[in-house]
Image (cartoon, rainbow, N blue to C red; front, side):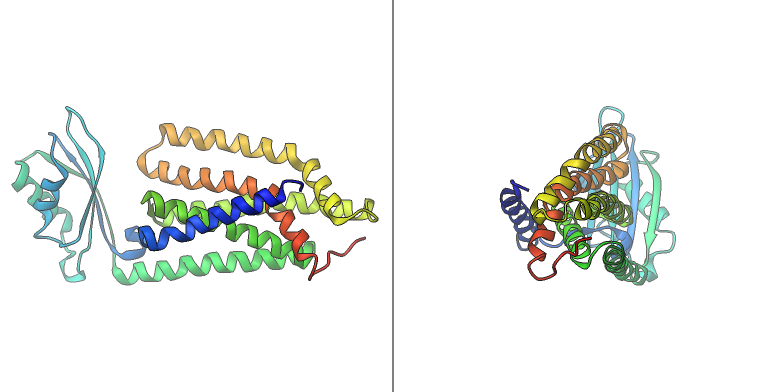
Length: 291
């Protein structure tokens, strides 16, 4: 708690940096799960240039996003994202394969994967994702308020908003795609972070009884230190698995792992340096009951 003012400054800077990513970099890059369209994984048996792939597919779609996955003497592998009108979605894989074969030669390309989502389905999934996050935070606030106090619950939820804002900013600054897999990672981070915060709050509740005459700041500080080894050991153990995914995982798993890595690091930080200081600030208007 003695370092809380430094934490205020650091958290404020990280939050402002995340918010500033929107006017500077634009909105987050949504995957086809939320925008609708097609995602095609194509393997070429020879080296090809990104601009040539885009030019070959231009007759099929005006907006084509090409992502180079791997390359070398054995050929190049690409992820192709494209907007597809509903009336033109039939046999899309065959159309793409034909266009690429015409441009690069017969039997020189292999379509390894095709994933399609309609624009209406994408919009529904986007709204469902927003509601899932809002409902999760609201239910967590009710649970925390019921089990502990309203000020602790509000502090925990604000702590989660802090973590999710930083995670959002990370994906905007890096240009990584936000899809249903990353949404699952974000909700996993919410559950992981709130678990850390609950452990601290549970210790605070016990210390409020045994240290009734002590100032609240001392009680909070004692609770954080009593749970500090558990928090750090759990987080470090989880991070070992996440780092393994980053090193050995596929491209999809790596984005998932990046979301977990940022969420766990800042979630651990916030459960120590953000949640309890917020309770101390809120105590001025929502006093924490003792005993």
